[in-house]
Image (spheres, rainbow, N blue to C red):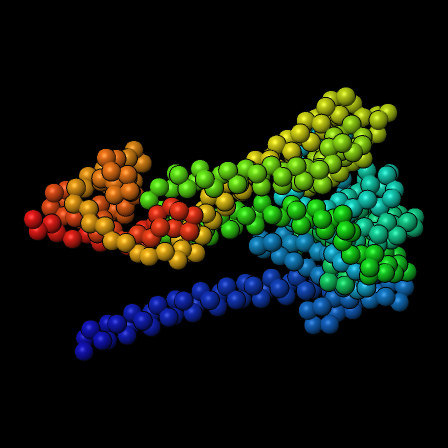
Length: 436
């Protein structure tokens, strides 16, 4: 009974402490939220807007905009952005390019990784605007972007938004967002920075051009490049699956011989694919593909941008770097193709050699066993070959099998099949005591 009372008192004490802490945290968060809403409400009312619950609306030329706050985990520092609905096709990000060095070239592989998050830089048709800002998004929207930025008032509106303090403009979820306006809960918001972006944002939503859907589809050339470029990645995935499925299920007695036989056919396919890949994807003999009259990848604000080269102003160093990186791209592609073809081909050969085998199963009893471990601590056994009398077979085994084998006291019964490609593989292994 005493123990029960002690546990009950301890439970109540812990519950009171946790409840008190939860209450304190809730009170602090509620106070911060209340102060935040007061600051935002005062700013919105100064701009002639209104508050509806936790939403804050602004009005400009008959359009309704929303002032949104977002916390970054700090109590006193948050950010604001202004949004306006807009039937904009696709997702885009417009960022200010702050790079000053025209020769700041970086590795193409890094550019590819960043493009996966931000999207490809899209040309607007205005070289001067493209030097100031980067429009990133899907390449399928190129025709739309060129048409959209053909009007000077839109480009001027973007410049005004960035002059007001915005770091980037996001176009997503059928709305345009001007972000980020930092503010602190310790002081009131200056409505001027918010007011400065209202009219330009409205301009960005006016007269959205209509581009036929068929124009926004991937071009046949792009589809061809994507199709042939994805094959190495698919082969790596096939090789990964084949390795675990084939090596452990259809373990060949002589994997080295099987690999050598498979490589004869792999190298033929490898050579043909490499030639087609380089000709279609890189076009090494086309003007502008080697960097002298082509595209260099240049460091920008928080991403990479593509800058059309200008022969009159481009330095010889940037031309040389462009050609060097073009060659490195080919080398990287060649390595990826070689690894994917050989890795997938060898592992797939092991898998198909056993999986498609229709031969009869044969049982072999091995009594003269010698076990050892290599420098990588992998376990093996060595025994007289029944395929080639007078020679030895070497077989990789598991650590548990290695511990169970006692040379001279145990024997192993190995069941095999001939293999589809003529390379004998192991169906099962069983360790038994040697009764002799």
